[in-house]
Image 1 (cartoon, rainbow, N blue to C red):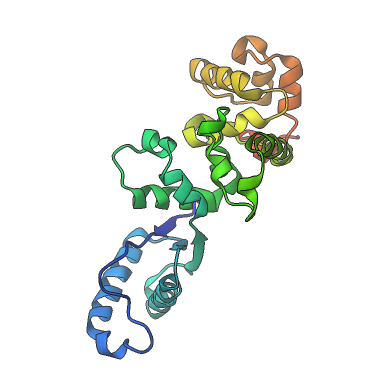
Image 2 (cartoon, rainbow, N blue to C red; image 1 turned 180 degrees about the vertical axis):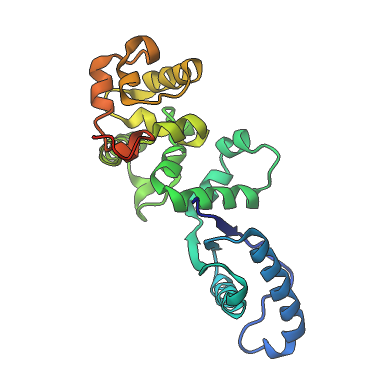
Length: 252
């Protein structure tokens, strides 16, 4: 069964959220907000609630939502986890042309919520979708890794990040079925040893032309996907769960 995530990104409002000092004075409005919030939670029935943490108000919101879910725990079918989510990557994504191409009609908060949910599920692939070969368009370079980062040669930084991305992707593997179905996962393919940007793009094109593979053997057939047997053998030697949907009895 697929897990459901509920992502909360709160806009700044003119009035502040009540704290411990003024909570009693605003008890009635807060109670109404809690009721609306709980109805929303019951409607979507999430397994996990992620709160975009960008200031101290996020801590109060987390406490309130945890209290709400605890109060209505008998109305829920399962326990709901409430946690914080780092908005660093979602913020970069929402301000990039990548998000505009993917969700042209959505505002910044919706884009951040989408990215935060995807980051929670697979941080590596959400980061690598920001990668571009053109250094001026490579939004991975905007990720703050160190206070002195701006003094580092950007070409050297890009080379080091690329080498590390190749190392990690080849360690973790890639789910080809999901890459076929979800556009934001396809950028990871270029970091698999032997691929690169051009072969990755050609492979995705062949996936659409031939249809997604059902077995590992189909990938090895050069006439199917055009990657060749040598590259195919290297490519499919990831753990079964990381590459293709497969029969539980299939041997890796």
